Length: 181
Image (cartoon, rainbow, N blue to C red; front, side, top):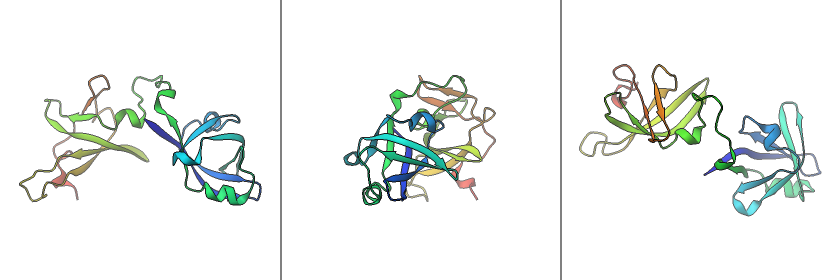
């Protein structure tokens, strides 16, 4: 599985530097000079970091072979990706990467199937987006519904990566899409 570590933004200056929207906790490691990064679309890369610097809170990167503003502009919007297998597991057993959580089955403490984690949002508090299957005969017309579960130990006491599931133990209505206002 490929993970996005950055997105190339607009060119900076005339020599080929680009701004990079950082999507990693380790920008100094991921964008170290000499590092080769795969791209999405794949036809844009791989790109090798020639140099990097921070300017007014924005990461500016120069890639080998990108020597002018026009070439830098062609890269705008390109995603910089790494293979998830290249990331060591977190040291804290209660910490997880988003890609480890997405796709896990969600069950209640009683073992009732609820749905599947479809995304993880980071908006002040981490939220699991749980896609619930739609009911084919109901008013939902078979369309899957999404519910948002705060990713805290009190509500998600068990994450079992080996079994591919997590348990959500929330108050009544938390997992009911009809209760969403």
